[in-house]
Image (cartoon, rainbow, N blue to C red; front, side, top):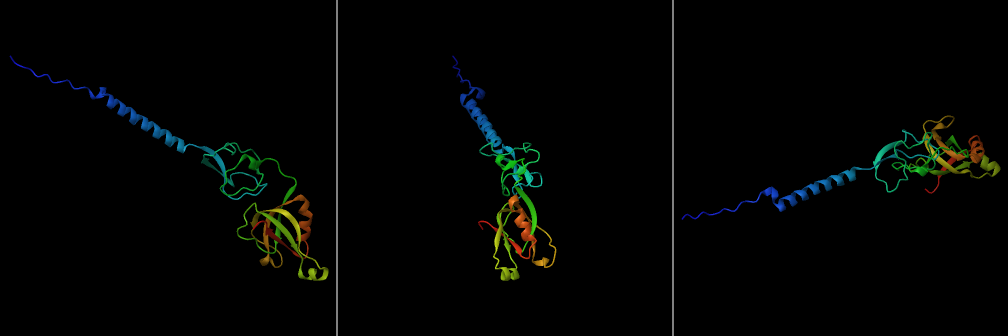
Length: 206
């Protein structure tokens, strides 16, 4: 009588629990990586200053750009949320994200912007929005005749920008700047610019 050996049947790989568990783990890993990459790339479109901005300056495409960022709060102006006629309510540094508190639509009637000539240039570190003092320096003849001394004509001015070009006698030694000053100081500043002395701008805190 012939003996026949029975060969055990091979279990299908597809039905092997270890194979199914492996497939599930790989799938979960791919999903997790996809979610992480998506989360890392995600963000909101927020306005960012492309240069230093002084208080009262208009906020528009000339000094703002849109960037994708992940701020820790919703206190920043997002794309299409910048109001018409937006103005900077305080100084904003280059590269700074625009916070909602930095934007206003109300012009401050207590301030005026003037272009004035000063006798000496400002330090190179003086950026737009820097607080400055404006001093009236009497001429040598006035100091001798009237015992005049330098006086502050505006202690709360803000530097806006340097203006190219100068006019008048001795223009080579004159620097022209645009400033923002309180309305109450306008009269004293104009009187100083029309006098025989010079005006000197002094950065505060530098």
